[in-house]
Amino acid sequence: MKTHSITQLVLAGMLIAAAPFTAHAQTHHEAHGHKHAMPHQASAPQRGPNGGTMKQASGLQFETLVSQGGIKMFVFDRSGQRISVEQGRGAASLRVEGNAKRYRYDLLPDGKGALTAPVNLSQIAGQQIEVEMQLVGLPGMGSRPLTLQEVATIPASQHQLAAAAIARQKICPVSGKPLGSMGQPVAVDVNGQTVYACCGGCVNAIKSDPAKYAAGRPQITVATSTAADAAAIAAQKVCPVMDEPLGGMGTPIKVMVGDKPIYLCCKGCIKKVQAEPAKYLAMVYGNQPRSNSIAAAGEQARPGVFKVTAADAPFVAAQKKCPVMDEPLNAMGGPYRVNANGKAIYICCPGCAKKIAAEPQKYLDVLARQGVNPPALQTQNTAAVVPAGTNQVRPGVFAVTSADAPFVAAQKKCPVMDEPLDAMGGPYKVNANGKAVYICCPGCAKKIAAEPQKYLAVLAQQGVNAPIIR
Image 1 (tube, rainbow, N blue to C red):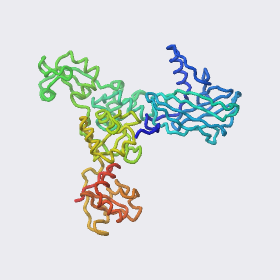
Image 2: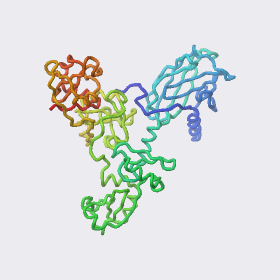
Image 3: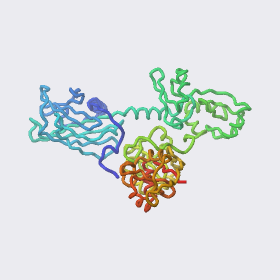
Image 4: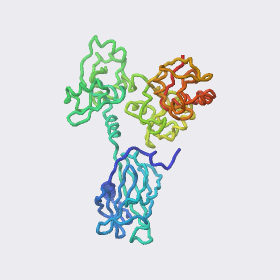
């Protein structure tokens, strides 16, 4: 489970030069009275011709680039002419901030004039990395290994920056509802600034009055409640700030956060709601989506393992830890989402998916003991039914009809052979515990008849909810 793959550690990266981060780290460190020698490092790194860090050592100049595709190094002589690295070799030892383990990768000639360690760093973002490189075999170096060090931070992708902005904003400035509770938040440009709305219905309100919503916070207004509010006051019962019965300190105060009313016991509580509207909206209305469910479809990181979106945010926040590793969901590049008996479980890395696929109920029970109720996964054909069929090509194996077409399109592949359904003369339809499973050939029917639940679970891991046979 715990591998030496760097892709399990953090988030997505972009091409950067490590020099500015190295310079900053050394300056900050020295400002506190600490100076550590770093062998062969230049005192004033510069930008190289390829956009990387330039350092001088052993009469040579080294340009290092850290990118989402790995680590690359070009070597130049004193005059700035690139020299051949075909006889050179090296190793890069990489450590991510907050993780004591080091990950070693070979630096080898790439045939294009550089020494390269082609490691996938696309999941690193926002965390500092330390890289130590040891080189041998370069012209003029002699037999003594050369050591260079870099400190860098790989920035987040646009998708991750958006997710962070949504997490900071928390609620829709129009409706006051938690972002993600109505599906994927909608980005709206307000005078060059991005504000997120909970749904498309709020977009026009933001565009029609951009000054009002530019701060990304809902408008908060205060009024005294009236007889028309009696039913809502009775339903809310207590003040979310003081946890006192409404009406116990006089007529309740009505605070509108967007279009959502919050009733308070007294005027002294108003400032609390104004300071943290999302907190008190969640206390009064809850921070879960309208139903405890989420769409099963999405972008797959690997088969059956889905990348999360803003719609997953409330469930990720509620679950907090991976039930397999007992680690925070973002500890190893996550969170990711998998299907466990029709419910969404969030995991810290794709490697945990196999454990849950093998024993889904075990991990649902782990979450239940922690007080977590995983959301149900919605599929396009939820609760759908399909005729059993009348044209048998052999006992228990039916030819499909036009009624099966949407389910065939949704399933796509045979769960036995993992081949397209039309690859071997199919699709055909069989009954698996009362549900229709489509197969590529009649020969697959025996497998499903022997272990129907196994193959229904295979489809569930792919986000497919097999229709009920009527």
